[in-house]
Length: 61
Image (cartoon, rainbow, N blue to C red; front, side, top):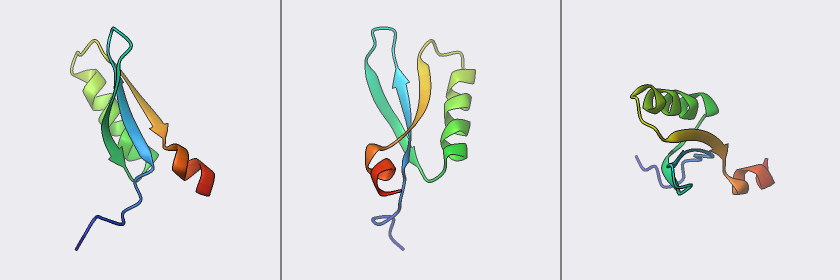
């Protein structure tokens, strides 16, 4: 079984105190991505975690 064709339109993005943004992961559902972001924020980190939909998935759906 391969994940090569999996649709993962939801991103978790970490933004640090300098404004740098990094992709943490891609997820199939917004709920899954939000759970990851909430868990990371709950660990006491000072970074901001956001859930965003990829631009490609917005254009096709």
